[in-house]
Length: 201
Image (tube, rainbow, N blue to C red; front, side, top):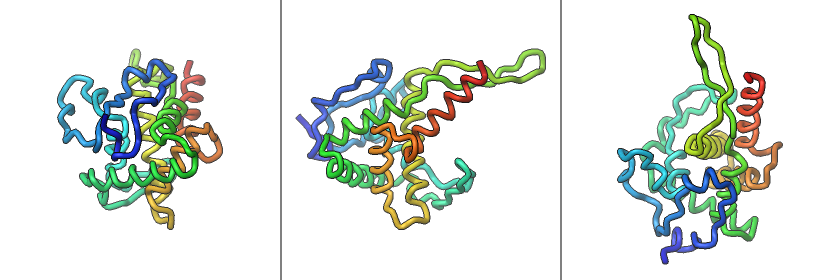
């Protein structure tokens, strides 16, 4: 059986959130790189290993747009650099394993379960008037939002700072897995999204 990066077993990883379980792929794979084979299939991303999806989220470019009050201008240094993103994830997993003494994939799954929001808002127009209403979030979008927020937290944590991207990603995974509301950006974003949904009910 293939171990992820030749080190981490995917067999004994437990997913407690059943709605996410059907969308999180934990296929045994040595190197999580499918070369976009599933990109054009309907819901093809649910067939992509969750670690590869995390690496894909890290490949976003620095658009110069403001994100949570910060402007990230990486000048596209991670765009298309899949092997570089995978190396960052592998190094981050090594740090997570060293600090938690657990399988880092299990820690990642716990973090994703904690970071996935259950409610969101959407804009509807009625009679020329736009307003926001609260809606339940589908399992695929919940997972996408959790992965995106964790990758964004790592990019913000390492941008213009002495901390490496691997260290920033590892710190975010660990703090989100613990449910630490003070240090985890993904948890803060989840709470903010759910708070907006509550006020829009």
